[in-house]
Length: 166
Image 1 (tube, rainbow, N blue to C red):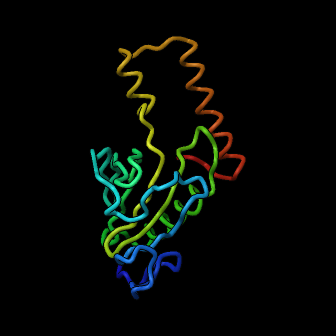
Image 2 (cartoon, rainbow, N blue to C red):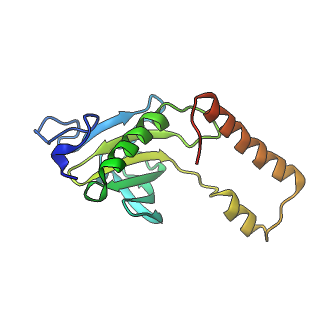
C-alpha cells in the first residue's frame, strides 16, 4: 500500500512537522510510559529478534536513553495490505486503552517513513510454554494455580472490555 493512502491515524506524509525532528511521529503515548523512554527508532538498541512474521518482527530491545528493556514490534509499511493497516490501527487503539497486571502494557507507538513501531512492556520471564519446558515439562499445583489464575484474570478483563483474545 502506498504511504499516501494510509489511514488518518498515521500521518499521510512527512511534511517536516513531526515530534522527533527526524521524520518520525508519535502515534500513541501511554500515561504509564516509563520516564525517559525513547519514542524514535534510533532510541533503541535491538538485542534479539523474538518473532518474525510476514509484516512484522518483535525484538527484545533496550532504550538508549533510560536503559529500560522493552519489546519493540515493528511493522514494515511496504508489507501491509489494506486490511493490515486497519488491524494495526485497531491494535494500537485497543492495546493502548488496556491497563491490567496480566496484560502486557503498550507504552508508545510511533512511525517513520518505512515502519510503524510499538514499544511494549517486556515479559522477562518468557511465556508459559517456555517456563514449562525449562522445568522439564512439569510444575507444581501451586505454580499451576498461579499461572492459570493470572491468565484467566487477564482474559476476564479483556472480555469485560468487549475484547476477545485470539
